[in-house]
Each structure stands twice: as C-alpha cells, then as structure tokens.
Amino acid sequence: MLNNYKLDAEDEEILNELDNLCGVVQNKDVLKDIITYIKLRQNDELDFGNYNIIIRNDSSYNLLNDLIRVCAKIFVKYEIISNDRICCLDKIINSRRSCPFDKISGIEESIIVINDRKLHIEYTDEIDNLSRIMKQFKDKIFIFEDTNYCEGETDAELGPLVNWRLTIEKISLEDKLMYCRNRLDENNLKYKKQDIKEFVDVPFWMLKNMINKLIIECKSGSINLINKQMLNKNKQTFTKSNSNHRSRNRNKKADKSAKEELNGLIGLEGIKMQMDKILNYVKLNKERGKMPTLHMCFTGNPGTGKTSIARIIGKLFEQENILSGSGDFVEIHGRDLVAKYVGWTAQKVHNTVEKAIGGVLFIDEAYSLVSDTKGGFEDEAIATLIKEMEDHRDEICIILAGYTNEMENLIRQNPGFESRIQFTVEFPDYNENELLEIFTELCKKEHYRLSETGKDILINHFAIAKSKEAFGNGRYVRNIFEKVKFEQADRIIRTSSKSVNTINKTDIECALKSFTLDIKEKRKIGFCG
Image 1: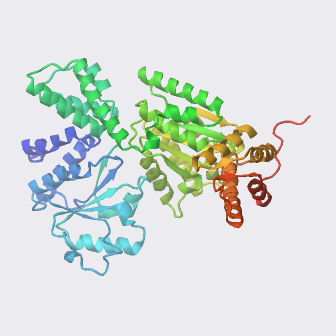
Image 2 (image 1 turned 120 degrees about the vertical axis):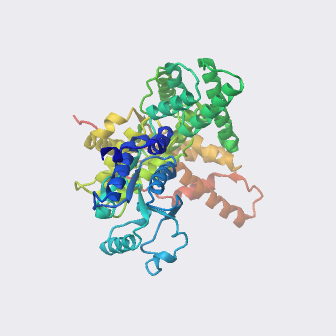
Image 3 (image 1 turned 180 degrees about the vertical axis):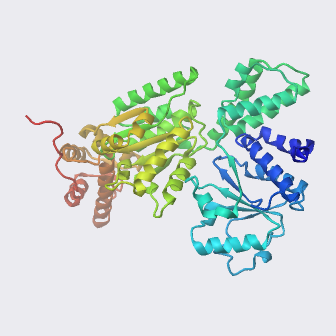
C-alpha cells in the first residue's frame, strides 16, 4: 500500500522541471506533498483541505507562470482539472460583484490566478463573496499570487480557503551558479567551478542569453571543455552590447561622461575629490570580490548640489559597471514612502525601491520619516527601507539626504541605517563668488548678457543672504534669476528697448526689492564660552 504513495517516473520528470528555475526549485518538497495529498484523497484516506495555493512572489523576474505550469501538469495528470490553461483575474470582487462569475470571459480555463495585492482583500463581505465563488466552482484550482510585503497578511486574510503555500524567492548568486552548472552539465560540457563563479555575476536575464550562446558555440565547434578565456569573451560580448544599447538610448546631455559632468559642476571641489575616492574604493573592492554597500547619506542645506551629485553617481556606477544601470534615477521626498492605510506603507517602500534597482534612489528630506509617536507608519517605512537596503545592497545605491542636524537625529534614532550607510558626505554652502558663477551660467544657457554693474549688486547681495539660516544656495539663485527675467521683460516692453538679451542693474535692483528672504538668522552651533 505504501508504494501507492511514492512518486513515479512521470512525477519526478515534472518536478525536475523546477531544477532550472532559479528561486523556485525549493518548492519541490511542497509539490511532493501535494502529489501525496492528491493520492490520499483519491483513495478516501483524507477528507480535509483543498488544492488551492498561495504563491509568495518575492522575485522581480517573471517566474510565476513557470511555477504554475508545473503545478498544472500535476493536477492534469491526476485528473483534478481537465487542461493546463490559466485564467488570470486581477479583480473579481468589487468590480465584478454584480456579474455572474461563470459569465466572465476566460472562466472556462482550469486554473484561476488572482493577484492578491491588486485584489485588496480586506473586508469581511469581500472574503464572503470570494468564499462563495470558490465553493461554487469546486472543480477549479485557485492560485493567489502574494506580492504583499507584509508576510503572513495574505495567509491571515484567506484563512481556510487555501491549503498550500509555495514561494518564489529573489535570485541569488548561488541560484545563478546552480542554473549555469545544470545547463552545462545537461549538455555534457566540462568547466572549472571557480571560473563559473565569476561568469555568473550578471543579471539573470543576461546570464540566460550568455549560457545559450556559450552552449551553441561549443556544440557547433565540437568543444567539450570550456576555459576561462571563452567565458570572459562570452561575458564581454553581452556586457558590452548591453552598455552600447544603453548608450544609444541616452540623450545628448547624457552622452557626456559622468566624470566630465562631475568636474563641470560649479564649486564643490571637496565633494568632487570625495566622489573620486568613493569610486576608487568601490572599484577596487569589487575587483577583490568584496563588493561594498553603496548606500550613502548626504547632509547640508538646500541647493548645495546634493541632487546633482546623486544623479552623477548613478551614471558613474553605471559607466564603471558597478551597477547594472537598468533602473532609473528615482527622486522622492521622505514622506512619499508613507501610505495612508495599515499594511500599505511597507508595500509602497518595496515598490519604490524596485523602480530604482540598478540605479539610484534619492530620498530628499529623509528625516521627515522621524515620528513623535512609536509604532506609526513612519516607523514601518523606516524598518522596511532598512531591510530593502540590506536585501539589495549590491544592486542599488540608496541616498538619504537632508539638513545636517536632522539627518544625524534620524541615524541616531535608527541604528539600522548606520550599519548600512557606507558613505556620509557633508555638502557646504556656496560662497558668494560661486553663487554669482551659478547665476552667470544660468544667463549663458538662456542667452542673456549680464552687465558688470549687475554682477556687483548680485555678489554683495549673495554675501549677505548666505549668512541666513537654511540658505537655499543654488535654489535661491535660480529663484532670483526667474524674478530678474520677469523684471527685465517688463522693462523691455515698457521702454521698447532693442537689447532684449541684456540684464542690467535696474532689472536686478527691481527683482531684489520685491524678493523676500524667507529665512531666519543662522543658529549658533556648538558650545558658547
């Protein structure tokens, strides 16, 4: 009798399809249990539970359908369902409540897949409605994709409606090693294990293409032994091709190298030197196989170039192959990570980080996440962000930015940040000459000519303004520039002047007269004797 519950050759063949699915293979044991469960039920040995599944999806790669197809083959083999077709429904509760479920297009398909995050199952009447539907269609298999960051929340919501749990995990270096070795072994190709480890240090989508090309080259050339030179040549072909593809999609401004952009910034000489040191440190440690955490903290007043430097860092890391460059530069305010409802904040943080994978996530005024009350949504955002910083430590550069004192308070109250932030950069205020240079540069870009008397007035004004607390620096200069353009246009029209591109003393005086400094005197910092 016991032999009836052992896996047969067809079962093993189906399960072995998981071997080359990185982040999925760990589900073999659960699927073995499902097969045994099916046999026990069919022999009337069990009468509890159901065949429905929650699949927790933590991967950014599309492996869900691959895993579901393996599940479908099992259910078809044991005649739980008649075919392996799949019907994906995002919203069947609220938007389709008045529509008979069996009239929905695609319901005749055998497996019904529902994304729990899009469904937002949170209320008793929704659970009741879903329960009614699942009881009505007992011959269907319901699979729920759980992408909710709060693990266990979906389990709690669905309760007895679902009997089985599978997972799709983030693809690790070990997963990629396993995939590479399996593919080469299947094709009877020999290699050195230490060479393969360096070869697989690329995004998984790229690795799959690299392996295919390598196998084709070996088979077509009657090659049985893969050496390190072949691996390096193959890898360089794909990484160079990917880099060229990104370069073709850049605009003209981005065609300038990141180093040129950095050196072209006004002032910030100390910051430029620090960026060079950071880049050299990261490059050397990556070559040594000890990739450091890339996360940073930028402190200083507004308008000191923090955002500009953050953008350039993303380009530097991309051009030096430190980051994949697949993600965009994502800029947000700290409060943007906090959602309105329970359970939403963690998912919001997770989604924001996912958008920036391969690039830079710049969080301005990150200190706004500090809350006066414990256990609030802000604490949830911080806890989630700290975990994401660890989970994606070598895939993304997360930069926390804000006023110096406030950022020190944020780090002090949340020690998890301190251990994950590799570099802290203090941005000084610009001096009056640098501020005038910023104004002059703005004039050049828009083809204005600035009179010498206008320069004298501006530099005197900047010398006074920069002594104020929380001075806006470059941002302040841009605001004045916009006001000056407004006054200049008014003068040109009123006087019918032909010098439409000239900014003179009068334009600047009028602009400064109406321009309000919305800042207070600087506080004294330190001890007073």
